Image (cartoon, helix red, strand yellow):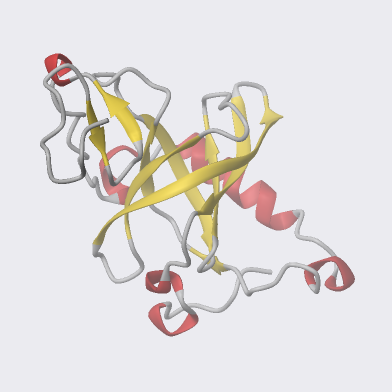
Length: 169
């Protein structure tokens, strides 16, 4: 068994940040684009998000949704650990965020329980890459899915003081 001070073998290397095996012959993962909302936000996504907001939960149901959720619209790129290294990232459209979770819609049915990294702009415009786990993905409208993912660690970039808007109902 090699010691911790020896370099990894050339055949396989362990990426400590993602804790997954990477084949060095395949090259690095695609670099995230960190696109702005105006670049490719479809009008259909706005319509679906407004319909979801109109169907807000009753106050008694909203009480169990802690911590407070804040509206956060951002283009999100998701790279699943199970994807091949050079695969294009999944495109998500964020709905709301907390320090622990992110709500989104997408055109893709995503596998529940899978881990990955999301790349998005935070409430102050900063570029974020966050390890996460897919918690929910269900069809809402034909061809569109509503979902949620959990951050593997609390993300203080999504704390209430970083949002200028009111909490999502």
